[in-house]
Image 1 (cartoon, each protein chain N blue to C red):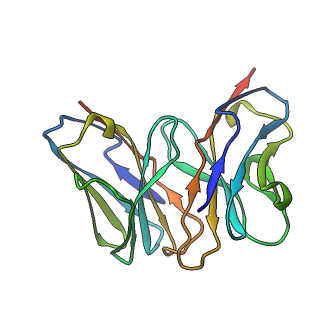
Image 2 (image 1 turned 135 degrees about the horizontal axis):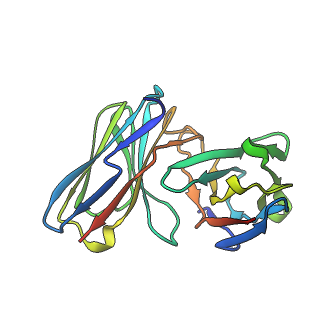
Length: 115
Length: 113
């Protein structure tokens, strides 16, 4: 069984500061890893994903994440926060069980940007 | 319309009502999903359809009844719901049920009185 833990249900950073949202996972097989963002009154939008290859993944809106197998982590970062980054962020994992991939989501982290 | 659309966006219903949620995807995908999003809980996968056939049903109460008449449309029929069923219901689609990237609709905010 796979699971996702997002440390910190709420994170506040100042505009221009580093954004760091933490995600740890457990999976019995090499995982696919995802970060989704949800803006108010909207559905989830894919920010970035890791499947294979380079462990540092770049996504939309200046976000990136690094897959660290030894730490079972996939933390999301952005060097300089913008007001428009205020949203809820979800980490998700999918087992590489071909033909039966299902997403398991974390409980989400609400990011607040302080002007 | 593009992407995944859901109607209505908001729904208030009594426990004895019958209502339906609608989802439509304009992406040419073959798989569609219903999720339930409650406050402070992970997204819960409810149903998965692949080529109009249900392939996943995660122990969802029978008061929720899905219907997938074709690969572009997905419904969730609701009857005799409970207040704890109040949540945001999200629809998603992917290329197929093994597709690792899912595209989400904006959701229907359901309130059960």
